[in-house]
Length: 188
Image 1 (cartoon, rainbow, N blue to C red):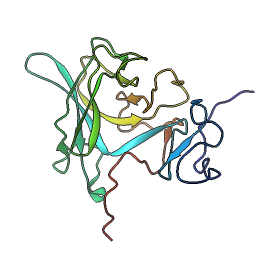
Image 2: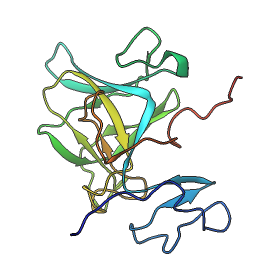
Image 3: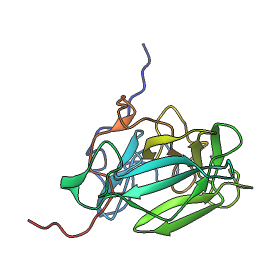
């Protein structure tokens, strides 16, 4: 029997120092750590303080926009008044599927794709984002990619996924601390 499963948390504990991979930094096979934070373990990381809103404008164009909540106690399974629009919008593509990212925007502490026109596996960010078409609602934001995606969709960063409902749980979504969310001061 052959099975795939993501790397377990702590797989980079053997790496000396704060940065690196257990065997090979560039193979796309092994997890890595950067500044002591482990990532690329073969499962999606959930951006826990962000909910993606998919909506339609009056001109019949469909968009994604991240909504951010910086207070853990106020996280919700829907966009409430505690969630603020990031101001970065990504137009949904003409067909549902993977599209390479051309530009990233940064607002309210969030990097999010801003344009996917003309991106490829060898140009611009070289990372892919799975987007829907003609869809409204909310989705969770998953990043870094899973073993189901392989290395092809992920460049230096990794692929992002904007299709999963907020209620979805599956083996390829990691339940761990993520380097992508709010890393501000902890107020005890």
